[in-house]
Image (spheres, each protein chain N blue to C red):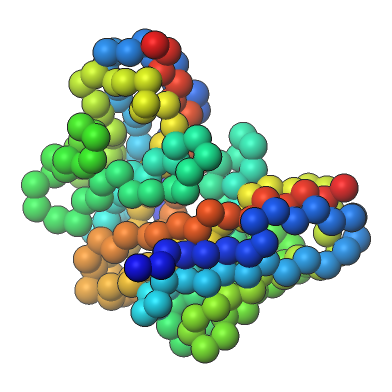
Length: 114
Length: 117
């Protein structure tokens, strides 16, 4: 069974600092990759996703993620965080063949200090 | 259009009682997922429905948990003989779930906060 690891459980940054959240998965086949975000008091929502093509994916609010197949990684980055980025971030993976379920990581809580 | 809705938004129950949580997915979405979100535990997969296929129940924590999806639309998650450790936010999500590999997006509902006293 596939698994998703998010090694950073809680990250605290000052505004304008750069962000990188790690995500590694275990499946060796072709995958679809996602980052979801949950802002305080709001629903989980999609931040960005990788399907195929350019491994550098750009999402909403200045976030991007890079798929590195050789490292089984899909790290999330943002060059300069804002207080409004305070949220919980979830990485997710899905096998791309057939009707496959999505597997989520345990999440990383990001706290941005003004 | 309407998103995923869940009811009730909050449920307080006594230990040992049964509860039913409802999810109305987005119309036309063939895939439906239930997750549990507990403090410090992240997002725990419970069950997955895809069209008319047999559901993937591999995430259900015990036989006290069950779920149905009627007519490929509304789903009900039932927890029998609730325990205090069942207290959590139960999230439902739906997606189009393309078979061809296209990365479909899950749309989440607001969740039901279950408190077992």
